[in-house]
Length: 235
Image (cartoon, rainbow, N blue to C red):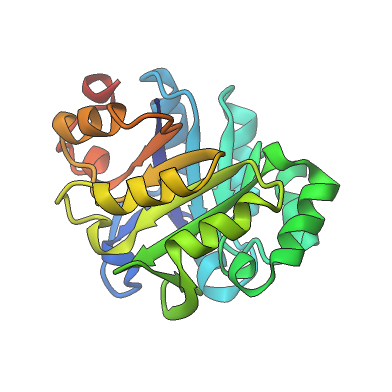
C-alpha cells in the first residue's frame, strides 16, 4: 500500500481545511515546492495535490504552482480540484501531473468520464468519491448529490477510469481514524485501484488500512502537518 502525502493549495499556500470547511483553515507553508521536495526526500512514492481554489470555483487556479512542483520532484503527482472539462485535464497532464482526479463532474456526467478516459487513458483518470454518511458530496463538499458512494463507485468502474479515491468527509482532518466499514463497502463493490483518504492520525490507523486486501494507497494530510505521525513512521 502506497502512502500519498497531501498538499492542499489555496491562494498559493499549503493549507488544510477541517472537514472541507472554507472558514476552518490552517496555513502550514508559503512554499509548496519546498513542501513537495520534503515529502519526496522523506520517502513518499506519490503525492496527492488538491487545488482548493479550483474545487470552490470550478476552474484550476494553482496549476502554475503544480507545474513547478512537477519539475522539482521525480515522483508521480495526482491532482484534483476544478477538473471539470477536457481543457483543464489536458492542461494538468501537460503540466506534469500523472493522474487527475474528477469529482463533481463525474457525479454530473459519467459520459464525461468515459470521454476523457478515451482521450487520455484510464491510468490518467481517477474519480474522487467524497461521501458523508454514505452520500456523495460535490462542489467542494458544499452540496449533496443523488449518489451513494457504492452506486457511484460501481458506475465509475465501467467507464474505464483506473482509480477511485474514496474520502470519508466526516473523518477528514478529525484524527478519528478511517471509516473502515464504508471503505470496505466501496472496495468490495469494484475491481479497480482504490485510494483511501480521511481520518488517518496514527501508525495503528495505517496498519489497519494495510490489512485491507487490494487497497492501493492511503492519503495522509493533517496528521503529517500537525506532526501526529512522521512519514518515516507510517512508511
